[in-house]
Length: 116
Image (cartoon, rainbow, N blue to C red; front, top):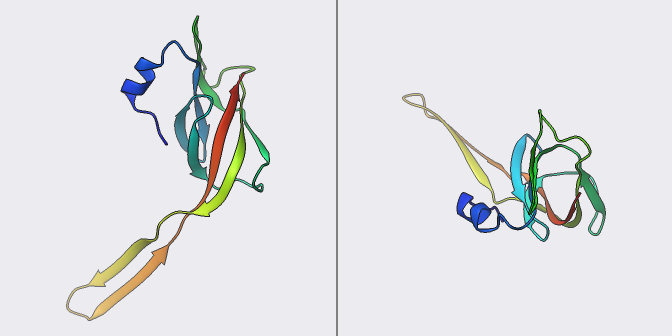
């Protein structure tokens, strides 16, 4: 589940953070479930994200340059899954070349528990 900008503005009184993992950035709040690039671990393991780009609580906003010093987001692994199949189709005209390939990206579903 990803938050939209309107969700962020509605929840400005609550704590949220922007984390970076797997080359992507995610806006998270405590209790958020999100699917990220696969990280090692099994169901129930604790995970810590130290690349926190922004934190916000009821009183102040901290923006990192590039990361916020001392900030940490923790969560637990809910499941290790794979995404839906993406089809890759290669085609060369006039030479009867057609090749179909499939790919399922491994994902980790994480539930955010705490922002420090």
